[in-house]
Image (cartoon, rainbow, N blue to C red; front, side):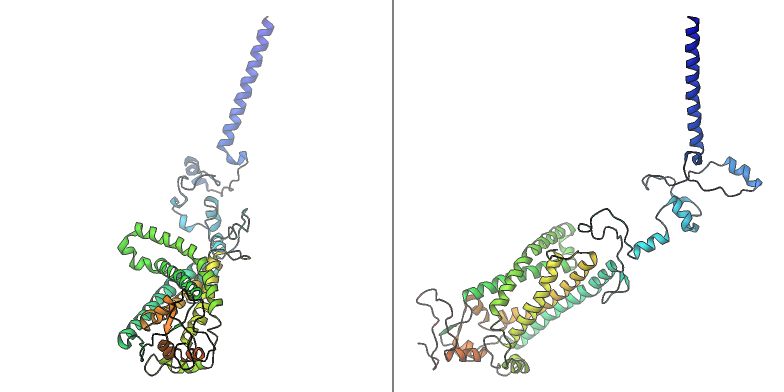
Length: 419
C-alpha cells in the first residue's frame, strides 16, 4: 500500500515538472521572437555607454503584423524619423508603402489577380498607364480623359449648341421664314407616305429623347443642380440615364429604317452643286432648283444621319457593352465616351438646323411631314425638278393608297391641272 502511494506521488511530481517546463519554454519564446522562428533584424553594434540605456528602454515590437492598418498602434508615422526612412526601412513596418512599389502601380504594371480576365480584365491594374489624349497632358489615362472631358468637350460642346441656337434665332428674326411667292392651287401632291412619316417621327422622337437626356447628364450640374438640389437632381439624372440606355436601341433600329427608306431620294445629283453655290437661296434671291430633297437636306442625311449617326450608334453600343469581341477595358471605354460625346454634339448642332427649317424656317414644311401632302405651288417653288418629274408623269403624285375616295391628292397633268 505504501509502495502504491509513493508511486502515485512520484508520477504527479513528474507531471508537474513537465508542465512547468512547457510554460518556461513558451515564456522564453514570447520574450525572444527570433527563438520562435520570427524574422528579426540583426541588432546594430552598440557602444558600452548606450548599452545600459538600451537595456532599460522597452523593446519595440518588430515584424509585419497581420492586423487592420487602422488598428495598428502606434502608427508608423509616429516615428520622429518617419520622413527620413529608406524604402527598405519603411517596407518593414508598412509593406507596399514605398516609392518603387507605387511607381509600378502608377506605371500600369499588371499584378496578379485570381479573377478571370473575361469578368475582370483589369483586376491586376490599380492605375492606368500614362497616355496623352488630344487636348490633355501626358498623364495616366483616367486623368487624361477627365481633362479632355472637362476642359474641351463640356465647355466647347456647350458653346457649339449655344452658338447654333443663337445663329438660328438671329436668322429667324432678321430673315424670317421662307414663304411661298405664288398662291396655293389647292391641288395636293403626296410628299411623304405614311410609312415614311412613321419612320421619320419614330426616329425623331428617339433622337430628341436621347439628346435631352444627354444634355442633362452632361450639362445638368451647371444649370439644374443649383435649382433642384443634389437629391432631386440625382434622381432625375439617374432616371434619364436609364431612359437613355433603353431608348438607344430604338434609335439604332429607326436610324436603319431612315437610311434604307430615304437613301434613294438623297443620292447626290449634279444640280446639288448649283444649290450649294447659291446657298439654297436662304440669303436672298430665288431658291435654286432641286429634286425631292435639296443639297441641304442631303447633307443632313449623309453627314448627320448616316456618318455621325453611325459613329454615335457604334460608340453608344460599345459603351453599353453590346458589341461582341471586345474586352471593354477602362481605356477603351474612355475613348468610346469621347468619340460618342463629340459625334453627338456635332450631330445635334446639324439636326438643330434641320428642325428649324422643318418647323419655323419654311412655311408648309412641318405640315408636309405631319400630313404627308404639299400644295403644287410649294413643290414647284422649293423642289422644281421633283415637281417637273411629277408633271411629266415620271413620278406619281399619289404614291400610297389614298385613305378614302375623297383624298385630295390627284395626279398632275402636263399642263399642271388636275385630272
